[in-house]
Length: 340
Image (cartoon, rainbow, N blue to C red; front, top):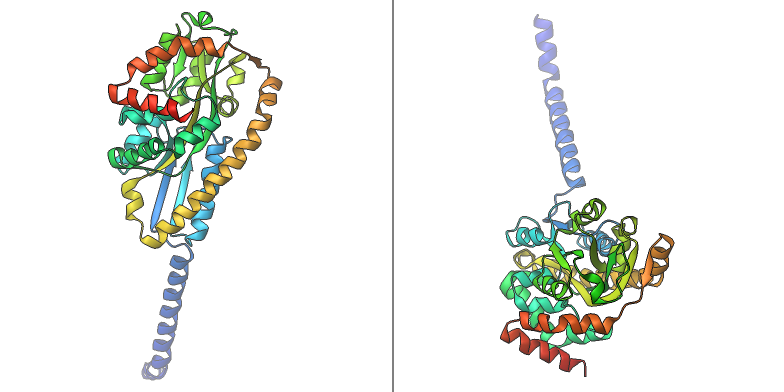
Protein backbone atom coordinates (compact mmCIF):
# COMPACT_ATOMS: atom_id res chain seq x y z
CA UNK A 1 0.00 0.00 0.00
CA UNK A 2 2.83 2.32 0.90
CA UNK A 3 4.40 1.53 -2.50
CA UNK A 4 1.24 2.49 -4.42
CA UNK A 5 0.84 5.59 -2.31
CA UNK A 6 4.36 6.68 -3.19
CA UNK A 7 3.78 5.83 -6.86
CA UNK A 8 0.56 7.86 -6.92
CA UNK A 9 2.29 10.75 -5.22
CA UNK A 10 5.13 10.52 -7.76
CA UNK A 11 2.81 10.66 -10.78
CA UNK A 12 0.33 13.18 -9.38
CA UNK A 13 1.92 16.21 -11.16
CA UNK A 14 1.79 14.27 -14.43
CA UNK A 15 -1.82 13.25 -13.87
CA UNK A 16 -2.82 16.82 -13.09
CA UNK A 17 -1.01 17.99 -16.21
CA UNK A 18 -2.78 15.31 -18.27
CA UNK A 19 -6.14 16.42 -16.87
CA UNK A 20 -5.39 20.00 -17.84
CA UNK A 21 -4.40 18.91 -21.36
CA UNK A 22 -7.59 16.85 -21.74
CA UNK A 23 -9.70 19.74 -20.44
CA UNK A 24 -8.06 22.11 -22.92
CA UNK A 25 -8.68 19.61 -25.73
CA UNK A 26 -12.37 19.35 -24.79
CA UNK A 27 -12.72 23.12 -24.63
CA UNK A 28 -10.94 23.46 -27.98
CA UNK A 29 -13.27 20.91 -29.59
CA UNK A 30 -16.30 22.73 -28.21
CA UNK A 31 -14.96 26.03 -29.50
CA UNK A 32 -14.35 24.58 -32.97
CA UNK A 33 -17.79 22.97 -33.02
CA UNK A 34 -19.54 26.21 -32.01
CA UNK A 35 -17.45 28.32 -34.34
CA UNK A 36 -18.06 25.97 -37.28
CA UNK A 37 -21.70 27.05 -37.57
CA UNK A 38 -22.32 30.37 -35.92
CA UNK A 39 -25.91 31.36 -35.43
CA UNK A 40 -26.78 34.22 -37.79
CA UNK A 41 -27.54 37.60 -36.30
CA UNK A 42 -30.71 37.70 -38.43
CA UNK A 43 -32.56 34.59 -39.58
CA UNK A 44 -35.20 35.74 -42.07
CA UNK A 45 -38.15 33.85 -43.55
CA UNK A 46 -39.93 34.72 -46.80
CA UNK A 47 -43.38 33.46 -47.77
CA UNK A 48 -44.04 33.41 -51.54
CA UNK A 49 -47.29 32.56 -53.33
CA UNK A 50 -45.59 31.12 -56.46
CA UNK A 51 -44.02 27.67 -56.72
CA UNK A 52 -40.31 26.87 -57.03
CA UNK A 53 -40.26 27.04 -60.85
CA UNK A 54 -41.39 30.68 -60.97
CA UNK A 55 -38.91 33.49 -61.54
CA UNK A 56 -39.92 35.29 -58.33
CA UNK A 57 -39.00 32.30 -56.18
CA UNK A 58 -35.80 31.70 -58.16
CA UNK A 59 -34.84 35.34 -57.63
CA UNK A 60 -35.38 35.00 -53.87
CA UNK A 61 -33.19 31.87 -53.84
CA UNK A 62 -30.45 33.81 -55.62
CA UNK A 63 -30.90 36.65 -53.12
CA UNK A 64 -30.60 34.20 -50.23
CA UNK A 65 -27.29 32.87 -51.57
CA UNK A 66 -25.62 36.22 -52.20
CA UNK A 67 -26.95 37.73 -48.98
CA UNK A 68 -25.52 34.96 -46.80
CA UNK A 69 -22.20 35.04 -48.68
CA UNK A 70 -21.79 38.82 -48.58
CA UNK A 71 -22.67 39.09 -44.89
CA UNK A 72 -20.46 36.12 -43.92
CA UNK A 73 -23.51 34.32 -42.59
CA UNK A 74 -24.74 37.21 -40.45
CA UNK A 75 -28.02 37.24 -42.41
CA UNK A 76 -29.64 33.97 -43.50
CA UNK A 77 -32.86 33.86 -45.52
CA UNK A 78 -35.12 30.81 -45.87
CA UNK A 79 -37.68 30.92 -48.69
CA UNK A 80 -41.01 29.06 -48.66
CA UNK A 81 -42.87 28.71 -51.97
CA UNK A 82 -46.51 27.90 -52.81
CA UNK A 83 -47.93 29.72 -49.77
CA UNK A 84 -46.51 27.06 -47.44
CA UNK A 85 -46.19 29.53 -44.57
CA UNK A 86 -49.21 31.71 -45.27
CA UNK A 87 -51.55 32.90 -47.97
CA UNK A 88 -50.67 36.29 -49.46
CA UNK A 89 -52.87 38.55 -47.31
CA UNK A 90 -52.02 36.57 -44.19
CA UNK A 91 -48.30 36.84 -45.01
CA UNK A 92 -48.67 40.64 -44.97
CA UNK A 93 -50.28 40.45 -41.54
CA UNK A 94 -47.57 38.10 -40.24
CA UNK A 95 -44.83 40.46 -41.43
CA UNK A 96 -46.53 43.38 -39.69
CA UNK A 97 -46.71 41.25 -36.53
CA UNK A 98 -43.00 40.35 -36.79
CA UNK A 99 -43.67 36.61 -37.23
CA UNK A 100 -42.14 36.33 -40.72
CA UNK A 101 -40.05 38.83 -42.63
CA UNK A 102 -40.53 38.99 -46.40
CA UNK A 103 -42.95 38.30 -49.25
CA UNK A 104 -43.99 39.54 -52.69
CA UNK A 105 -47.21 41.50 -52.96
CA UNK A 106 -49.02 44.22 -54.87
CA UNK A 107 -52.71 45.07 -55.17
CA UNK A 108 -53.79 43.19 -51.98
CA UNK A 109 -52.07 46.07 -50.18
CA UNK A 110 -55.00 48.24 -51.30
CA UNK A 111 -56.92 46.61 -48.43
CA UNK A 112 -54.67 48.73 -46.18
CA UNK A 113 -53.88 51.75 -48.39
CA UNK A 114 -56.13 52.64 -51.32
CA UNK A 115 -53.45 54.11 -53.57
CA UNK A 116 -51.79 50.69 -53.87
CA UNK A 117 -54.69 49.59 -56.06
CA UNK A 118 -52.92 51.34 -58.96
CA UNK A 119 -50.14 48.76 -59.19
CA UNK A 120 -52.72 46.32 -60.62
CA UNK A 121 -55.79 48.35 -61.53
CA UNK A 122 -57.70 46.69 -64.41
CA UNK A 123 -57.77 48.51 -67.75
CA UNK A 124 -55.48 51.34 -66.59
CA UNK A 125 -52.07 50.68 -68.19
CA UNK A 126 -51.54 49.60 -71.78
CA UNK A 127 -48.06 48.07 -71.65
CA UNK A 128 -44.74 47.85 -69.80
CA UNK A 129 -43.82 51.37 -70.93
CA UNK A 130 -46.88 52.79 -69.15
CA UNK A 131 -45.95 50.67 -66.14
CA UNK A 132 -42.40 52.04 -65.93
CA UNK A 133 -43.61 55.62 -66.33
CA UNK A 134 -46.00 55.14 -63.40
CA UNK A 135 -43.42 53.42 -61.17
CA UNK A 136 -40.89 56.23 -61.72
CA UNK A 137 -43.41 59.07 -61.36
CA UNK A 138 -44.23 61.04 -58.21
CA UNK A 139 -47.34 58.85 -57.89
CA UNK A 140 -45.19 55.72 -57.95
CA UNK A 141 -42.89 57.18 -55.30
CA UNK A 142 -45.93 58.10 -53.18
CA UNK A 143 -47.22 54.52 -53.43
CA UNK A 144 -43.93 53.16 -52.12
CA UNK A 145 -43.66 55.72 -49.32
CA UNK A 146 -47.19 54.96 -48.13
CA UNK A 147 -46.28 51.27 -47.99
CA UNK A 148 -43.59 52.17 -45.47
CA UNK A 149 -45.49 54.83 -43.52
CA UNK A 150 -48.97 53.26 -43.36
CA UNK A 151 -48.42 49.52 -43.69
CA UNK A 152 -44.91 49.02 -42.33
CA UNK A 153 -43.59 47.26 -45.43
CA UNK A 154 -40.48 48.40 -47.28
CA UNK A 155 -40.64 47.83 -51.08
CA UNK A 156 -37.43 46.44 -52.57
CA UNK A 157 -37.83 47.31 -56.24
CA UNK A 158 -40.35 45.63 -58.53
CA UNK A 159 -40.75 42.29 -60.29
CA UNK A 160 -42.74 42.55 -63.55
CA UNK A 161 -45.76 40.26 -63.71
CA UNK A 162 -46.50 40.71 -67.39
CA UNK A 163 -50.05 41.33 -68.66
CA UNK A 164 -52.76 39.34 -66.90
CA UNK A 165 -55.02 37.20 -69.09
CA UNK A 166 -58.16 35.16 -68.49
CA UNK A 167 -57.99 31.36 -68.71
CA UNK A 168 -61.14 29.27 -69.19
CA UNK A 169 -62.57 26.12 -70.72
CA UNK A 170 -64.48 27.99 -73.40
CA UNK A 171 -63.20 30.80 -75.63
CA UNK A 172 -63.97 34.32 -74.41
CA UNK A 173 -63.67 36.94 -77.16
CA UNK A 174 -66.12 39.59 -75.97
CA UNK A 175 -67.63 40.63 -72.61
CA UNK A 176 -70.92 39.07 -73.74
CA UNK A 177 -69.19 35.67 -73.56
CA UNK A 178 -68.52 36.14 -69.83
CA UNK A 179 -72.13 36.09 -68.62
CA UNK A 180 -72.36 34.01 -65.44
CA UNK A 181 -68.79 32.71 -65.66
CA UNK A 182 -67.33 32.07 -62.18
CA UNK A 183 -63.90 33.70 -62.20
CA UNK A 184 -61.39 33.37 -59.39
CA UNK A 185 -59.82 36.73 -58.52
CA UNK A 186 -57.37 37.79 -55.80
CA UNK A 187 -58.85 39.48 -52.75
CA UNK A 188 -58.72 42.93 -54.36
CA UNK A 189 -61.81 45.17 -54.58
CA UNK A 190 -61.00 46.58 -58.04
CA UNK A 191 -60.77 43.07 -59.51
CA UNK A 192 -64.20 42.19 -58.14
CA UNK A 193 -65.64 45.45 -59.52
CA UNK A 194 -64.12 44.92 -62.98
CA UNK A 195 -65.32 41.35 -63.50
CA UNK A 196 -68.79 42.12 -62.15
CA UNK A 197 -69.06 45.00 -64.63
CA UNK A 198 -68.06 42.60 -67.40
CA UNK A 199 -70.87 40.20 -66.49
CA UNK A 200 -68.87 37.48 -64.74
CA UNK A 201 -69.18 36.19 -61.18
CA UNK A 202 -65.85 37.04 -59.49
CA UNK A 203 -64.88 34.87 -56.53
CA UNK A 204 -61.98 36.02 -54.30
CA UNK A 205 -59.82 33.06 -53.34
CA UNK A 206 -56.29 32.35 -52.07
CA UNK A 207 -53.91 31.46 -54.89
CA UNK A 208 -52.96 28.10 -53.38
CA UNK A 209 -56.59 26.96 -53.66
CA UNK A 210 -57.10 27.88 -57.33
CA UNK A 211 -55.86 24.73 -59.10
CA UNK A 212 -58.02 22.40 -57.03
CA UNK A 213 -61.03 24.68 -57.39
CA UNK A 214 -60.65 24.71 -61.19
CA UNK A 215 -60.21 20.96 -61.19
CA UNK A 216 -63.37 20.46 -59.14
CA UNK A 217 -65.39 23.09 -61.00
CA UNK A 218 -65.89 25.31 -57.97
CA UNK A 219 -64.60 28.11 -60.20
CA UNK A 220 -64.57 28.05 -63.99
CA UNK A 221 -61.86 30.53 -64.86
CA UNK A 222 -58.98 32.53 -63.40
CA UNK A 223 -56.75 35.39 -64.48
CA UNK A 224 -52.97 35.72 -64.23
CA UNK A 225 -49.84 36.41 -66.23
CA UNK A 226 -48.37 33.82 -68.60
CA UNK A 227 -45.58 32.90 -66.16
CA UNK A 228 -47.98 32.04 -63.34
CA UNK A 229 -50.34 30.21 -65.72
CA UNK A 230 -47.46 27.95 -66.66
CA UNK A 231 -45.82 27.65 -63.24
CA UNK A 232 -49.13 26.77 -61.55
CA UNK A 233 -49.93 24.12 -64.17
CA UNK A 234 -53.26 25.70 -65.10
CA UNK A 235 -52.85 24.17 -68.58
CA UNK A 236 -53.86 20.88 -66.97
CA UNK A 237 -57.32 22.20 -66.03
CA UNK A 238 -57.94 25.06 -68.51
CA UNK A 239 -58.09 24.94 -72.31
CA UNK A 240 -57.96 28.60 -73.35
CA UNK A 241 -55.86 31.68 -72.64
CA UNK A 242 -58.05 34.61 -73.60
CA UNK A 243 -55.55 37.43 -74.16
CA UNK A 244 -57.43 40.19 -72.38
CA UNK A 245 -54.27 41.88 -71.04
CA UNK A 246 -56.70 43.55 -68.64
CA UNK A 247 -53.95 44.33 -66.14
CA UNK A 248 -50.34 45.30 -66.76
CA UNK A 249 -48.90 44.55 -63.37
CA UNK A 250 -45.90 44.23 -61.14
CA UNK A 251 -45.27 42.90 -57.67
CA UNK A 252 -43.12 44.32 -54.90
CA UNK A 253 -40.63 42.16 -53.03
CA UNK A 254 -41.00 43.55 -49.50
CA UNK A 255 -39.50 43.30 -46.03
CA UNK A 256 -41.00 44.46 -42.75
CA UNK A 257 -39.80 47.99 -42.08
CA UNK A 258 -39.12 47.25 -38.40
CA UNK A 259 -36.95 44.28 -39.35
CA UNK A 260 -35.05 46.35 -41.91
CA UNK A 261 -34.44 49.14 -39.40
CA UNK A 262 -33.14 46.58 -36.88
CA UNK A 263 -30.17 45.81 -39.15
CA UNK A 264 -26.97 47.66 -38.24
CA UNK A 265 -25.89 50.19 -40.85
CA UNK A 266 -23.26 47.93 -42.48
CA UNK A 267 -25.77 45.11 -42.99
CA UNK A 268 -28.41 47.50 -44.32
CA UNK A 269 -25.99 48.61 -47.02
CA UNK A 270 -25.10 45.04 -47.99
CA UNK A 271 -28.77 44.05 -47.94
CA UNK A 272 -29.81 46.85 -50.32
CA UNK A 273 -26.94 46.13 -52.72
CA UNK A 274 -27.98 42.47 -52.80
CA UNK A 275 -31.58 43.58 -53.43
CA UNK A 276 -30.47 45.47 -56.56
CA UNK A 277 -28.75 42.35 -57.86
CA UNK A 278 -31.81 40.22 -57.07
CA UNK A 279 -34.10 42.55 -59.07
CA UNK A 280 -31.69 42.54 -62.04
CA UNK A 281 -31.45 38.74 -61.86
CA UNK A 282 -35.23 38.33 -61.80
CA UNK A 283 -35.63 40.66 -64.79
CA UNK A 284 -33.24 38.50 -66.85
CA UNK A 285 -35.15 35.38 -65.84
CA UNK A 286 -38.46 37.08 -66.68
CA UNK A 287 -37.36 38.15 -70.18
CA UNK A 288 -35.99 34.69 -70.97
CA UNK A 289 -39.21 33.09 -69.75
CA UNK A 290 -41.54 35.45 -71.64
CA UNK A 291 -39.80 34.70 -74.94
CA UNK A 292 -40.78 31.05 -74.92
CA UNK A 293 -43.73 30.75 -72.56
CA UNK A 294 -46.48 31.12 -75.16
CA UNK A 295 -45.01 28.25 -77.14
CA UNK A 296 -44.78 26.17 -73.96
CA UNK A 297 -48.47 26.75 -73.19
CA UNK A 298 -49.46 25.87 -76.76
CA UNK A 299 -47.36 22.71 -76.57
CA UNK A 300 -49.15 21.86 -73.31
CA UNK A 301 -52.47 21.97 -75.17
CA UNK A 302 -53.74 25.50 -74.56
CA UNK A 303 -55.27 27.68 -77.28
CA UNK A 304 -54.45 31.40 -77.26
CA UNK A 305 -57.51 33.49 -78.12
CA UNK A 306 -57.45 37.04 -79.51
CA UNK A 307 -60.13 39.19 -77.86
CA UNK A 308 -61.82 42.53 -78.42
CA UNK A 309 -59.72 44.45 -75.87
CA UNK A 310 -61.47 47.75 -76.50
CA UNK A 311 -64.86 46.19 -75.72
CA UNK A 312 -63.56 44.80 -72.41
CA UNK A 313 -62.04 48.14 -71.42
CA UNK A 314 -65.15 50.14 -72.33
CA UNK A 315 -67.42 47.77 -70.44
CA UNK A 316 -65.44 47.94 -67.17
CA UNK A 317 -63.76 51.34 -67.05
CA UNK A 318 -66.65 53.42 -65.71
CA UNK A 319 -67.44 50.97 -62.91
CA UNK A 320 -63.78 50.88 -61.88
CA UNK A 321 -63.53 54.68 -61.87
CA UNK A 322 -66.74 55.06 -59.86
CA UNK A 323 -65.51 52.53 -57.29
CA UNK A 324 -62.60 54.82 -56.39
CA UNK A 325 -62.82 57.51 -53.74
CA UNK A 326 -62.83 61.14 -54.96
CA UNK A 327 -59.15 61.49 -54.00
CA UNK A 328 -58.20 58.33 -55.93
CA UNK A 329 -60.24 59.48 -58.93
CA UNK A 330 -57.94 62.49 -59.10
CA UNK A 331 -54.91 60.16 -58.96
CA UNK A 332 -56.49 58.00 -61.69
CA UNK A 333 -56.81 61.01 -63.99
CA UNK A 334 -53.25 62.06 -63.19
CA UNK A 335 -52.02 58.61 -64.23
CA UNK A 336 -53.87 58.91 -67.55
CA UNK A 337 -52.06 62.24 -68.12
CA UNK A 338 -48.72 60.44 -67.66
CA UNK A 339 -49.57 58.37 -70.73
CA UNK A 340 -50.00 61.39 -73.01
